[in-house]
Image (cartoon, rainbow, N blue to C red; front, side, top):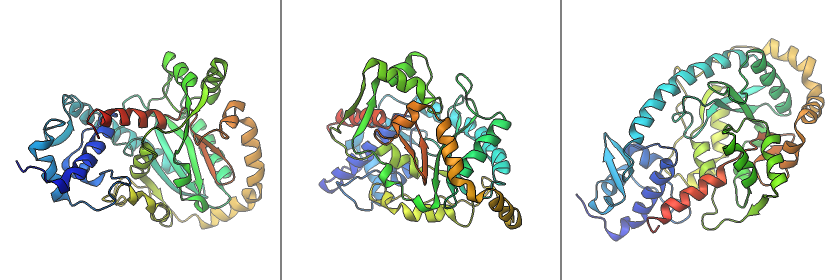
Amino acid sequence: MEKLNKNNIILKEAIVKTIAFFDIFDFPLTDFEVWKFLYVGVETQNFASLRKVKNVLESNRIDDILENKDGFYFLQGRDEIIKIRQDRYIYTDRKFKKALRVMQVFKFIPWLKMAAVSNIMGAHNLRDGSDIDFFIITERKRVWLTRFFCVVLAKILRLRPRPGKTRDKICLNFYISEEAMDLKNLMLNSSIILSGAKNFVEENKLRDPCLPARFAIASARRAGRLHSVQDDKEVYDIYFIYWLAGLVPIYNNNSAYEKFIANNDWLKEYLPNWRMKNIAGRRLIKRDDFSFYRDIMDLLFGGLEKNFQSWQIKLMPAALKELKNIGRQVAINDQIIKMHANDRREEYRKRWIEKIRGFNI
């Protein structure tokens, strides 16, 4: 075993931070994944080679924190998460097949530019009973029209999640226009802790973020526990960083995914070894030539974007509309529709900080 030298101390800390974050989601990493998803933050924004990462992982100076089994690295005493990850890969394959079938229908929405499956690490850690989160990019000034047709089609196909029925359903809570591809402004700096809402969710076992906001927000308001909390150590939204890196495109019109990643090149400040997905293959729906059909749809509906926006906002729960002015859980405007009432990013960040503090990092 090679011992660490002083130059590798910061790299060791970055490795532990990375593995500790994924431990929150019962997700052990291979040595390549540790290198690929290595979180460096602002302490050291430099590229670390795979060889250097392997040297640190194999060093006996890190054995008091990490274990290695079956090619996976994880925190000490957590070898049970290897089986959890393997089981979830089976669930993932089923959910991807479902997502691709849905996209065979959604691709007829003419203003849809990109659709990706999202979750922690882009669906590769999906649970059996979870729904399937879609992240959608639309043409300019067509975000509300696109949302309308996505929701209507999902309802017709009986694919919308409901309380107690989320398994393999489609969650459609995040849309952006192609003119708003840079998502850095959606990261948390200071955030809202919805402790009352969180308690309501946990007490009633309603853990799905797609459930109506009015339940969680009303509970928090009644309890008087809607308050703001400033960050205590890390000012970066680590969950959002990995959410973005983990997006898996299943539909890509006119290189929208490549443009999206180019607009979010700030991601490399935190994950310098990460590279965008190679999206060729069986998990990508091909774009058909709908130019004539698109022109007809645009003629019929193109001038009604504002009407569709106003109508859909009126139908939203009042609590959800109120939440858009508090923190960054909810964004409702001409370019972005983000409706995550039960946004747990602050919770995940605090759990991550608690873990790494235990290692004096």
